[in-house]
Image (cartoon, rainbow, N blue to C red; front, side, top):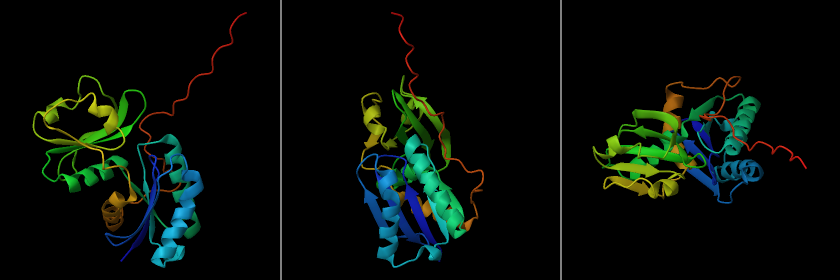
Length: 229
């Protein structure tokens, strides 16, 4: 069975997992925010040591490909691609929103829809909507949380909102069918099944052209113009 290394760096927690086939073998996580560049490779080494594997035994590297934190995505992408080039192994890109939807599905299998959310600053979230078979109902987008854009799905039945955008959404999306699942956050655990399936079906990335799924351009404040004195 294939051995896959999974890297999740899209949010505050830095998460690394190893899997054998579709089964989780080791999970290592670091909770400190903005520490991905310092701890990611250390977590990889810890996981490999605990599993008793060498890097040469890996069959593929899986990356949580976004959307999410721009800096986190850059760090994760650079690390994953570097390992793939060094080991001559393929890269598997796992959609971060789909992994969040899978985590919510495991906790709430009775829901009609799953709407993962990643914080995109201000009143925006990166989001999508999935059905219980993880079929995309609404494609990944950067969406402003105004006028309850999820109302047509909420009117149909329970919708589970998950991810680090949930705290922002709780104060804006009021509906009897809204379920806010704050326990489901980006983690390498939820990448395992999705990455395994992509590996089996040979849905691999071209290392030369792969870029994370940013969904929108990086934003930075414009420098202030000098004042006339």
